[in-house]
Length: 262
Image (tube, rainbow, N blue to C red; front, side):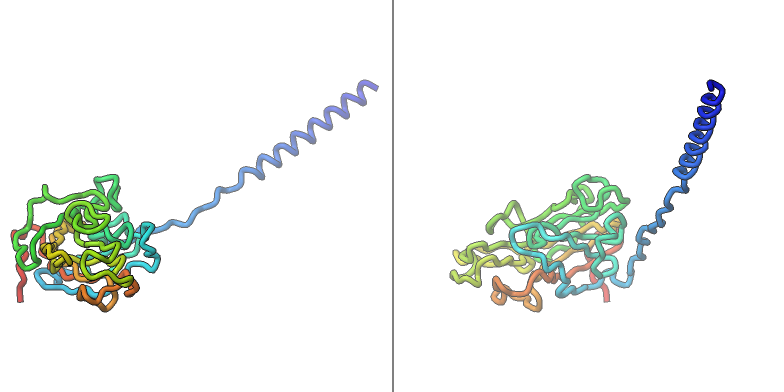
């Protein structure tokens, strides 16, 4: 009787071990092989753009600008004169980012600052702003003057919700630039050509200066944030936005001036 029980027990243990072995071998299936996602390739700069006056009209930002929340950031390459997809954030394919509410903040592409949209890449860009007309900005600034943080420059201090010298002036209540009307509320005025407020105060023209991701230099004249409308008197609350228009000149690394050549 004991022998029979022992044999039965031995048989049970043997079957259990076989079952465990089978389960173990099944659970050790080959790991799932994830497809390799190739990073975007770095694009060659278009050197034919250097030392030319380039006009950009109605660069479409996003239709998710509600004036209350930060809009999706959009990216532009001054080196190739085109918009760049967000998937290129970790490359040197873009030079300027338009971010935050109404895409009203701008920054360069720099991989060293953890607030920058390009943090972790090998870009060396930056941005600054001067209170000078575009044509009066002739010299390339020293590299130490460029800001490398994200959202580096935003709304101007002379408007609503502004802070410091900005490239746009925001008229929240519609009383700063023109006589009050509902359609004059919530208008963002590009300051590339300056602006005179309703109280007579003259806002000097603003020019943005960018060190590109690859270390070249550009000056930018902001024109408009509204589709097909390039003069302040045309801009209304319900005008199609945000469509960014600007002029720029890009010059190669080592240049001392923003020279335009034939």
